[in-house]
Image 1: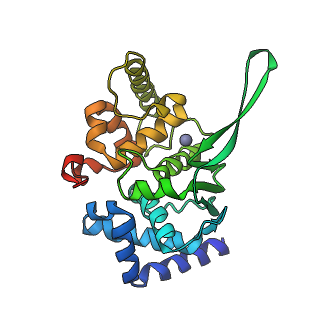
Image 2: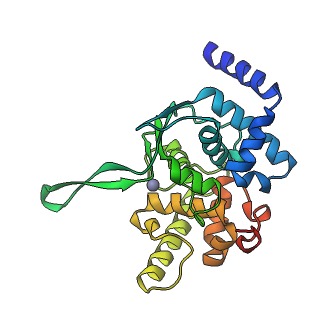
Length: 264
Ligand SMILES: [Zn+2]
């Protein structure tokens, strides 16, 4: 109780400080999404970034340097997902580990008959039970520069963290009060089935095929597209966009320009 009182007092003090001008300059360079936000969203977004930077530990791994470019590219993209719930600071998340490139992670699954399979694969990001997030800097950078189409590894990993807020990683994030969770989940499943069918039939789809990996990855990959290129998501499946607009409590199509107008 005392801790949370102290924390909210500290947070209030941080929000009252002027946002450092060099951070604005860095954000406009490493997080191009900054240009999409109107005045009110931009103010809330920058307050969230200041709090996030004050509370989280950034660790460079494998020789990665941590500077303001790295910290702000990550906080800026993470702050986009928090625009719908600006008081959410991911309290369980303590540290962000940044690598200079992809790293090789372990993956395991159990097959029928009790066979346990383990293998290694290259990764761009990973969320570990909500306590830490691991990110590859080149992928973080591409997402902030809008050079990865609808992808952003930061948005992807923070979508996983939000997914796990109401229980296990299951591709079903918390929903606002009053939303029928069963109906929402059934409609999301129908979107995933439509997507997988289109993928199987070789039709063009809005999402990277990594979305077909599992319901958990479907939610994270669809969320990347929702924030990075909502018009592409709407063209692919307008109902999926609407469902995500409910869970993220935002409507990014009203702020994000069509990709053809972004000057890329
Ligand atoms: Zn994932």
